Length: 188
Image (tube, rainbow, N blue to C red; front, side, top):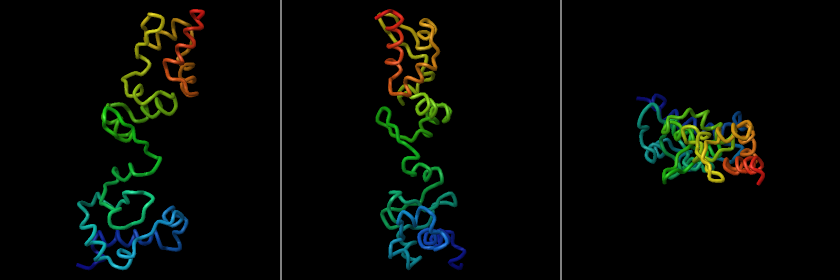
C-alpha cells in the first residue's frame, strides 16, 4: 500500500498545509502562529509513531490546547463532535453537581432543546441553575410570606414576564427582578 492511500498520511499532509501553505495564510492557523513541530513536519513515520493509527474514519487530529502547536502531547484523535467542544470561547463549560459539560451536552442530558437552554441563559439572562429547570418561570418564590411562581407574581402585580426577563438581562437575578416590582406593588 502506498502512503497516499493511508488515511493518516492525508491527515498529516493536510495538517502541514494548514500551517505552511502560502495560499492558506489567511487561515487562523497561520495568522495565530500555529506550527507543526519539527519532528512531525519532516517525517510522516515519526508522526504515525507518536499518534498511532486513527481509531476510525470518524476521527481526525485535534490539538488539545487550541492555541498550541501540532506536536506530541498536544494532539489526539477525536471525532467531529469532540472537536466542536474545543473551540475556545465558542463553547462555555458549565458545572453542575460536580460535573462539567458544554451547553449542548447539558441540553442533551436534561432533554431540553439546545436553543431553548441557550436562549434562557444568553437572551433571558437566567442563571444556568435556573435555566436547567423544566420551566424556570414556574419556580416558586416566597416574598412577604406569599409563595407563587414568577408567572403568577407577574399576573398578580400586572406586569408582563418580559419585564422580569429584561431586568435579568441587565444583571438582576429573577428573584431580584420580581422583588423590586412586588415591593412597589405592596408599597414597600
